[in-house]
Amino acid sequence: MSGEANRYAIGDFGTLTKFTGNDIPAGTKPLVEADGATLTEAGVSYCKVRGIASPNVEVIRVRCDQFNSPVLTEAAIAHDRTLDLIPERMDKTKVMSERLRLDWEAQDKAHKANAAAKK
Image (cartoon, rainbow, N blue to C red; front, side, top):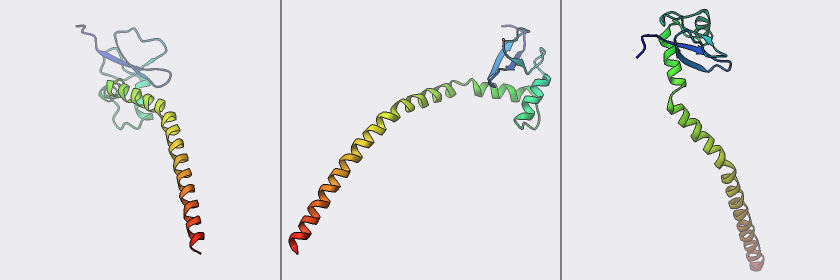
């Protein structure tokens, strides 16, 4: 295992990236210095923008781990699957609503005919 410290960078769309060494991923700004213990100017401003009271590397590490968590990916996949099912569910709801409307109309007609016959 390498003795290099983990570093973090932020991408164009706010995505956090974890990397080691001096090879900063393309299209990102480093948030942590090469020593892995101090924040860069971008790291300090990242913390200030997000309202973090005491900016430090651990806060960024935790946010990066949360952002890259497999649970987040699973939730996004489940959400996407739900979005795929919504049109089908809406169509089923429309069909059921139409059946109920026709049934209620038939009951209403039968009730009116029954009331007219009693008069």
